[in-house]
Length: 212
Image 1 (cartoon, rainbow, N blue to C red):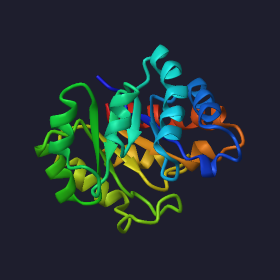
Image 2 (image 1 turned 180 degrees about the horizontal axis):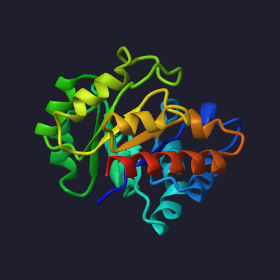
Image 3 (image 1 turned 30 degrees about the horizontal axis):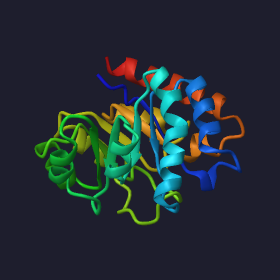
Image 4 (image 1 turned 30 degrees about the vertical axis):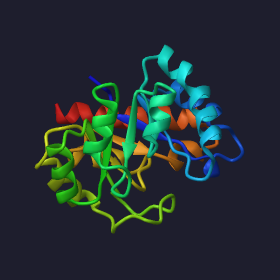
């Protein structure tokens, strides 16, 4: 069983000059449970280099490494999974190529997206965006907590909320039904990423405990 409760998405443009590895090491110390390597503006070889810098660190701690968008890189570096958006390779094709060797997550911006992802065999869904966020400008209007709650009531696979989530609203996303929260700037841009992760971890665990 994969623990998606506190899911870090990397972004070097927000890390204040720190490397992905620096951020991930700090987040692991704070209790992050899953890491997605997201690289939108680098070449294939650099992306591979970044992934290989994280893989042994995460593997030793049994924390899944998910590669954003790039199925080829996920397979090449023997990552644990790949996360695909609505404009990426279709899930059915990705599953045909990867078989059962990879976790496959799908971004969903609507109930239709979420239902389709579950029907086609996604392992988890990233509900996006929950709140407005400056880290992604190509997404749909925010779903807000009502949208999260509606989607959570319709699908049975794990659901992770992403988009504008921080220490002030993470618990409410869990309370609306999500199994976890994915964060970017709340950890990546923090002056102390370990402390920021630890705070989020406590808030998420408390919210999950309330759900029973």
